[in-house]
Image (cartoon, rainbow, N blue to C red; front, side, top):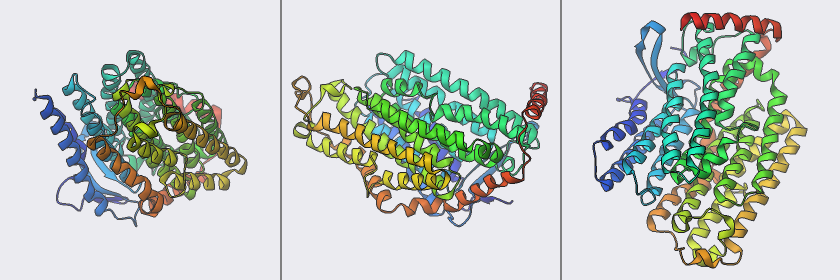
Length: 521
């Protein structure tokens, strides 16, 4: 089967690492002891991470084919199969989801004291959903996992969040559902237009009419842009981040935002190349607008979590800028920066959560002189601050360098404006660090502060290692994605053979498929 390499291991590794967290969640439902619940949640996430390592050890970097594939009949009437696999792009996100899930459990060890069972069940279910998204090779299965992330995240924000948690959780759901509806319609249209199949690999080989591509691209764009989120539909993010518990913020920043970028790579670019090429410049302009706007608004924040949340708008702008440069350098930089953002922003939220547990304040003005009072914490925060601004030798430097290099190849004017976003990014992170670490000590919080415990240090150390490892050896991660990205861009370049876009024809064709959809349903 072209483009597919069946699992060479002696067990269904992708199914195991996908559903092991779900199995752990079901066992936790039977437990009553809070300590046993915590330990089982930790054991489950650690086991998932360990079992994912053979995927990296046996991964063939010389092919773009989907590897470790598992294909089983599921719903024959609709030609739906259970099909999973990973390529050089998705395998990196599986690793990110697995390691951050472990850290979400450790950081919540003492922070979550009420409804412990429900909290850790939610964390494990969302881990299954996240990994499931990255391994799905069936659009129907992809959509199920996509929607599954919504339920546990709603509860994480709405039950264990801050004082405005109800507003933030409902707003989160409204935005996500609104975007997902368009993707669902798009998937159904793809099913009819692509030969009555939900197979993502097969759908990517179909040459769709230009007018249909434009409509489908916009439908999927609505879902992916909301999830990232892209400017101007980003307003749910600061509220969700601010009110979510620390683990919820780490999951949101570390993984869920990446689902939108991954969707662009898995659906939009290979399936709708004509639309992507047609909207090339507007997409770049939208990305650089997010970079500058996100950085500017971040400078105005006094809430640490809200500041880091708005910084994600800035960083995700760089990601989409890289993806839509449509060249090897930019796309690889965009993928690498998604991984980097998950590591760095996840670490920053972990740090903020640790001192919040002590003072119950997120306000920057409530802190000061932390370098004197809690020096170990301040050193960790300094490392992640330098990483966030793209300091040479750290991971984000490589990602931003590749993105900006790719942007210059695509459009020099837009690339020049993106540099302004880098400068502003340095400003807001240095300004944040100065105010909490180097400013005068605030007596109102000084008495409640104590330095990091062993558990907290152990939570942050793996991320420090990744920051420096990727910064010094980025080729390790780039080697995984290189062939897959090259193949992806070959698919994008196929747009030159597709007829030009016509609005009238587009309306007619989409109307035809809508009629088919209603007849099918």
